[in-house]
Amino acid sequence: MRIAVVGAGYVGLVTGTCLAESGNDVSCVDTDAGKIERLQRGEVPIYEPGLEELVRRNQREGRLRFGTDLAQAVGRAKVVFLAVGTPEGEDGDAELRHVIEAAEEVARAVKHYTVVATKSTVPVGTAGRIQEIMGRRARFEVDVVSNPEFLKEGAALEDFQRPDRVVVGAGSDRARRIMRELYAPFVRTERPILFMEPRSAEMVKYAANAMLATRISFMNDIALLCEKVGADAEQVRRGVGADTRIGYPFLFPGIGYGGSCFPKDVKALLATGRRHGVDLDLLRAVEKTNERQKRHLLSRAVRHFGDLAGRVFGVWGLAFKPRTDDMREAPSVEVIEGLLGKGARVQAYDPVAMERARRRFGERVTFAPGPYEALEGADALFVVTEWSEFRNPDFDRMKALLRAPVVFDGRNVFDPEEMREQGFSYFCVGRTA
Ligand code: UGA
Image (cartoon, rainbow, N blue to C red; front, side):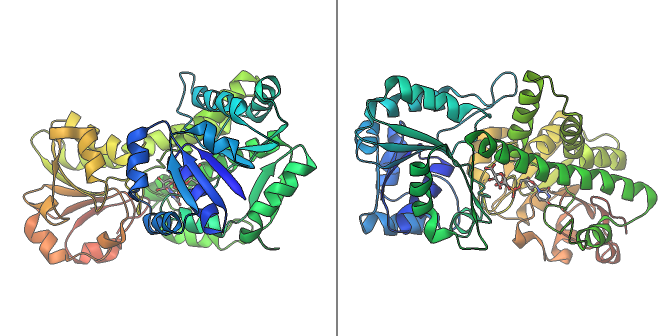
């Protein structure tokens, strides 16, 4: 099937590449000519395990192309995916400018019956707005469908190719048939493709992310209470998750959720609530808990050291989670800004996110070539991202490099008892030695 993907960002690239891999003829377009040139050379501008190899292979085999000519790509496509960015607007709602502009351009470019599928996370009712644009501007019949994405950064290819479910909000049988055909290689009976009205599909995306964010904030609250009453949040997590009605995923307490999705989508859903006079009190609390959580370990450091001015802190991990170089809404930013704001110095290391972090912090932070170098002469270590290479470090080497053996662990990567035995002052989330 001929496919056009508008927007060669994270979602667009993964969608386009996976659809090429399943045998379709895919054109990805973007207005950023520099990015397109790099992609044409087979360079993927984001870090996502396995993506670059897959892009190159599909390019070589002629199923995947990159360009800036939207009209040409759309004119020959049967399905057009809109995967442009939806940054946070002033009122917290998703900003739709790029989506609407892209939709107008697509409307002018269609040359026959076309399905236009929104992949960008957009407020409920957006598919309807785009359908109206098509009605006004397109010279051929267009069906607009909502096809939200549920990819996790760092596992995006696997999530696309083996999805828990595919959600398609479509109003016509013709569009449903085409979408079913397109996703057939990825869905089996136990991995359903769920058809519904576009508004419900749009809501599924927000409700799913808000639910996951709620689980995390809930466990962060419980972890805080565990610290106070002397319970162990890790044991509690296991005991709670074992209930099949609850399950294990997304119950890890930590330094707060970050990334390009949860914080933005929670805000956008709150904005939708406000617009419709629905008080989403629970979700407001989720957001508040997350803000507190990002500062939690910093408060512990202040309690431990008193004044932080002149102290040096090693920081392990900058990305908002492992296996990505994405720094958007990363808890590391809150931690580092907090430390710098209190007059401390920061020596940071991350396996892949240092280039992005350098753009964010410039000269204000020292970037170390490796995890141990980040500890040289430091008063303490902050673990902010749970990269697996941080999980089994050489504790003796750490102790030799640190001025005092103090670790603030925002991801519970170490065992409190072992840390105590090793002689560390160890502070983590919801657990005490
Ligand atoms: C999230 C969703 O998981 C995807 O399904 C969705 O498609 C995506 O947002 C999106 O809307 O595009 P992502 O932001 O890549 O994916 O990352 P997650 O793995 O969900 O992690 C989000 C944040 O929650 C991270 O900061 C992570 O450290 C934190 N987290 C996750 C916890 O603190 N505890 C947990 O138990 C799980």
